[in-house]
Picture 1 (cartoon, one colour):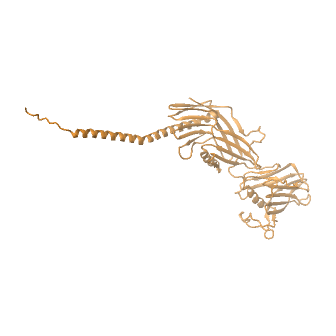
Picture 2 (cartoon, helix red, strand yellow; picture 1 turned 90 degrees about the horizontal axis):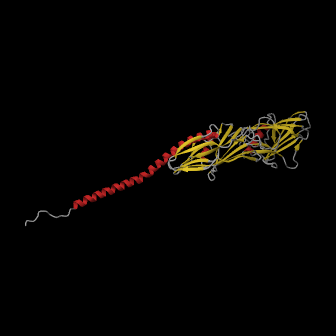
Picture 3 (cartoon, one colour; picture 1 turned 30 degrees about the vertical axis):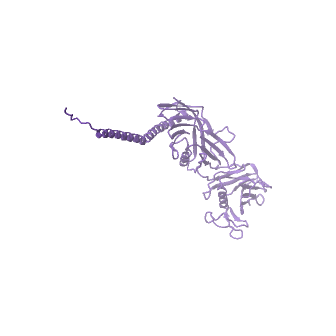
Length: 452
């Protein structure tokens, strides 16, 4: 029988082809997996950024509509926002608040506002967008918060207007899809300042007072930057407590005011070479025993003493005025305009000159405006120097520590007499440090927030 020509053999080529396909598939799978692994965070970040941007635009619209509801422009407002997996939360008692004090130079202070502002927050991933105090803020995973739209804080160089918008309730929603935000006016607006029914004289125009605003917020740095831009003030920030503080000074009255001690000086501009504009006493029922001693910065202090004493009976020979600061002392013999039993004493009278009387040479005048930048000595050059220049000089020094008061001297003997306080008046007018304020208006507006 003839053998078959069919041969039996082992094929290495088929095995190689199968392995090749397997390796190719494995490489493809690994490549796709690697690509997805690398791209997913970017895709996820893009998605997160997209929803945050959409939410930011929606909440900007909400900020505008919420103000309309708060101010009673409309009975209600509706804003739609695409959640996209984020969380929307309204908070009545949030960790932000605003406190406002009205202070005078004696240290007396009254709190006219201490209120949580509340907030409406949208959070997606590591980014939070918050509505607070009428403004919109955005907080990124790293870096400081930024202001998207400004809060309700209006200052024009003279008037500060704060229409505070308070979130009045707490609720939350989240997930995907569209959420509806409803805004409705809450209780009736409350006028915080001016308050004519208060015993604290919370009236306009302000005079000789300091307004201190303290705000606590996660967005305190954004608030600080905005306030500095609007008011030209130098704010103080506290990174530990997340607070920003700003003070505004009101100018004193330019007309005669009833003489009530102490005389309060609030925020005098010590950078001005002549900050005191008027300093006049109009005294009633003056007699030959006229003697006024005023002290600063405390009632029993010897740091600064201003004495006005009648000289030479009831004629027109006038008064002796002594100004003492630490070891430096000056004396002026000044005429007082006296008619009957009344006297007008102008401490900035350009004709009034003073001489240096202290046995200790002066040390505070070296940086004074020329030609007064020198050392004065009772045994050497002692003047005369205009009384106005002397008062300006020492009151600038006193104001460098902030505000101060001139107290009725309370050491024994008091040396306060020879006239009648009742009916007497004075003018102490001076320039104040910026930011300056003359009128203050604060109104609280509650807003009820609803989600669906």
